[in-house]
Image (cartoon, rainbow, N blue to C red; front, side):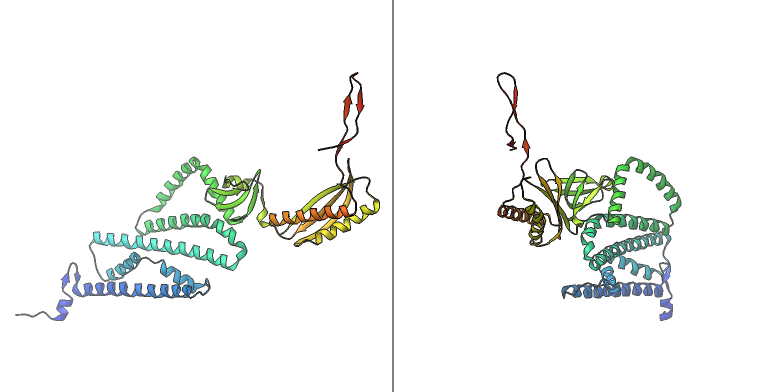
Length: 371
């Protein structure tokens, strides 16, 4: 009786492959499926431990590698193990095609996930480097991620089809013709989408900024792919299409460094000339006595119909409107008190009254103060 040697068993055929080839393929598959998850868990655990210990994220290459490890899917690791293990085997054509389809699909799916994670990582890194752009980027994140996702997943799909042997040139030509038809049908939506990209790239405003758009005014709550939402002063939400807001003249009060304040008052023509000359210095002292103010000027500018008109200009060194209103109120009260101490009277608009007697004759009446 012939007993087969180990070498003969090793090279004996089994399902189109020798036993040795099957053994190498299975060992490679199992080792890969064991080692890669361990490496992924180790990298991800170190990143989580660093975050739990309260360390500031450095947003460097090491941090990015840890994030990509966390975004790696288990199915992708299975696909890598299957690919490496199948290199030692000669599979039937049908199984070979199925294996290639699974490996290629999972590979480009994982690449797209990594690319999306890298885009989000770059956005977070830019926000960490510049706090001034925080509100701008917060409002643009959805738009940037939408556009990046559209490009990344489209490229991943086309590359996967190309690797699977699909002729993508005719497909691209067909998509181009179909895209023109779709663009004509949804041109309003595309216009808003392009406008949202303009807002994301140009950064004219961000979340929390107070805007005046034509005759509307409100605070930005959300910047979407199609529209921007404002919360008006009276409380209701205003929804403006991105295409309209890009075309409009927008005043962004949220980017104010300081606020220029101008107000006028009018004094009686009976006021003493010496008192008139002393008023600018008194007003300057009052304005400079308020916190967060920078005095500019106070001048007697015009002879009005009912009085001598002064104009005062100063700056509030904070853009907060409530702070400006409090300061203006304090200035008004201080000016009123000072003028009473100086016996200076404000002028009041007057009007001429005419009365008609029983004979039909008109007679002028004494001027009366306008109520």
